Image (tube, rainbow, N blue to C red; front, side):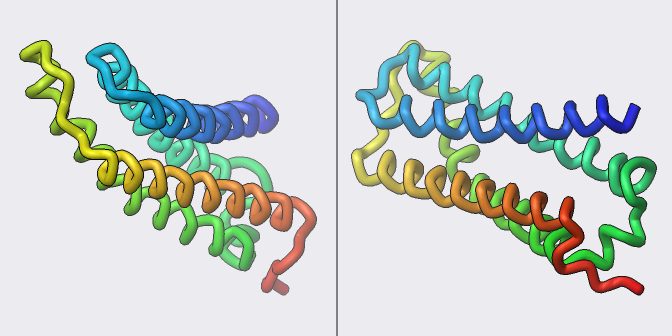
Length: 151
């Protein structure tokens, strides 16, 4: 069961990275009705994946793996949680932007998005992907017991 739970956790994490990459690449192209709708779908999948990571990760900490005491005394785990929160906070801006497109899309109109807005969203996504890569480093350090502060 532990392996299955770990697999689900990792798949949700990979999904987030793939979805963010798809959003970024789609935003690099001229925006169309179809691409704007795709981005909204991508962002919804991103949200579901983030929730799954949180739920499954919580289950792993509390009931599987090494137990909550180990993780709460692990500097890489704490860093990983801080990075997860930062990614969540900075993802709010793109998500709100994509939600606001809904009115235009329902009317069959391409949302008006300046090149500067697209660049800002793409920069945020680049930062998210970088922070997610740092989370992978933290996970590898946790697996090796690096930074464990327990007795």
